[in-house]
Length: 416
Ligand code: TTP
Ligand code: MG
Image (cartoon, protein in one colour):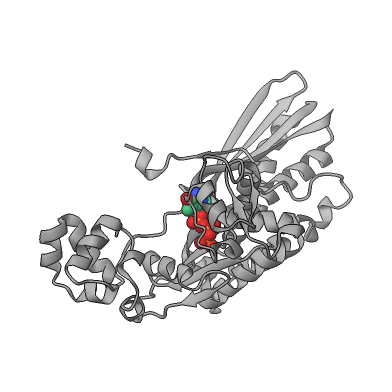
């Protein structure tokens, strides 16, 4: 059985680091982000590490912070900017796996167990993520690598800022043992006081306590605490609910009846849909085309594929066959291609680099995955089918899941 490889990624002094990046005069200086300034009644959102030296912390009244660090530069919170940067960070993380669970604006868990054949082991992926965030966003992130979310989170926090900490499998309990109990999830100030009364200062001392004693003292939490102190935590990385369908639509600037234009447009859309299926790690069993004519009459035609796919060709072929009889004699205003009936793609075929599948389908897949990688690194237009060159069509279609129409299932917790 392969052990899980979990990463916890957390940006350093996030709001302050973004401000220092965008305003070079703030670099190297104590920066306090929050409210309206040193006399404001609000609290500190965050402080740069230069300000933390003076004892300034998140959630502290701004006036207290000003007293501790009179030379600090106070900067108001620019939420929209931080959200935009946050989504750039999450996009970088999703290059390595679709299994990304954002937990706050600057923090996410990732399950990279299945990504290792493609990107290297957890440590190497952690290094690549840190370089990508530094090179592309000019920010630093701390990363923890471990077999559980709990240990990965403690690890990312341990040597902040700008650090990578790896806890090898089997070392979890020893890694946690010397750390103070407050580092554990679920140990608040009250519980920490109670534990100190029992003479427990470190996680190791907590782990050596009898689980039934903890249970008697703290109830259900006590049993969970005993397990966590040993680094045991089976909480899976909860990635987003999978999309129900992935599709693209295109409205022509001028209504067209040119079969060549229609075919190329369907190809561009099939290409975009297939790319997003692969990026999401799913295959589609159903293809739907939508055709709207100059009189705004709309038809949709649907077909089930013999085999679920995430490749351009079968999607394009199905779309062509569905569209051809419908567009005859029409002036087409809008075309759409949607893939639905999605199923998780087999993880093994997705990330295996071990030379099993040498069949045609498998070789085709290696090629498109290489193309996907080139697009990831050099941009969407770096790999374009000859047929799409010089057509003026977007090639391939926009793949950003945030801008494309798609329908999501409610999260599991919303289903009942
Ligand atoms: P954190 O990741 O907790 O803090 P940080 O990124 O500033 O510093 P580091 O991770 O290096 O310790 O929170 C992320 C952002 O969330 C932070 O930059 C500002 C915001 N935030 C608040 O607005 N109020 C708070 O009380 C906390 C803790 C964070
Ligand atoms: Mg942070």
